[in-house]
Length: 243
Length: 243
Image (cartoon, rainbow over all chains, first blue to last red; front, side, top):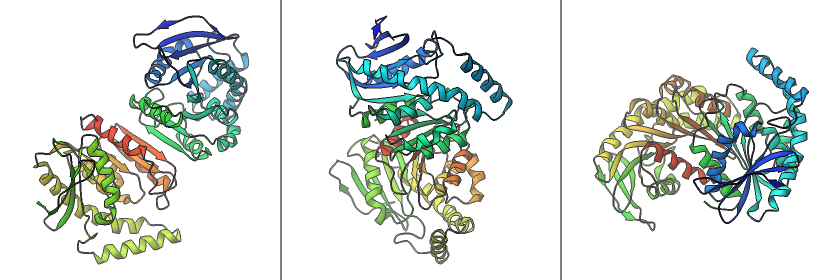
């Protein structure tokens, strides 16, 4: 893990770029002290996502956590995958045409999860070796399928905030039933790209004893501002650090 | 409106019993100052409900509100209705037998709403004339059908926290579509007596531009403790009083 940039933001949050092998990432920490880590999931393309990621991260740091993210395989400046690019284009076409997408989602998301999850675990190894970063760890965001796999295979992940979406391969529903950590699931009721029924079915499938669904009006990017606060309160309960 | 009892609870909340004509009620206020009013809905039987009602009310007063409730028609010490008692017994039998309940709910709940809503409005008149009670007003709880009617007909109600349930007469779904105030809806995912699909259908039907659904695991009385806090934060946003 090698730091590539370092800046102090105006709210006192320190934002550092890093690379982990060929994988770029960002770490947000307080100016001093340490905090439990929240891994910030996203749909790929950290540079384009970074204003939204940074604002989620800064809110979390303000409430006593640290936050980090890494680029997804095939996104941003990382080597593209012809198969993934083709599946992504097919998915857009099928969604626009209102056609079924299950098979395409399987072909797009399953290999992504298989490749990304070990990378997030390697990032965890590196991040948790820093003095300012503590466990237990939370995962927050999409890609929800990555969050599901991490929740099942990675014991350092103690709680997760998942953005409900229907882009979870049907083959992963069994895995969802094996999730046992506390979950806080966000659903946008009128999400253009997501099938509401399938999102509710997925929420129902999760094996966790404690799981909450917060559904709000509006489209994919319309999560209301108070949900950020609510997610951090959830993490505060489970990562044992109060605001 | 006549006060019948007055006690200071150990957290400094003042709990006063009152009667409004023949209808008993309870008012919770801070020791000094005033706050926007939250009407506390309940399924009837204020005496039996009062420990849970009082704990919800004290949390609200602690966050800058005042709270009040009145007994429902046909419940507690109020004159019974033979028709309602019969319908209630039929409902219990039908639920236990897994039989459809739509017709019984119609017969039980519609007259209750017709009778109760003007009583809650009369209580509002009396309560808002007290110097320690301010508007705008919130409604919190079940009977959800009473909350729906109040949200539609009573302009002093500015926001509502509703406990989602399927015991809403089908004839009131059109009324639900006319609700326009911000709503915060609680759903217990495994509620024994409630049909989850019908609760989700009702949530979908509400006409409000801002509505959130918070679904949690467990049965009817298993609403997790942090939801009280979350509901008060919702009221703070809409009744314009911060904690």
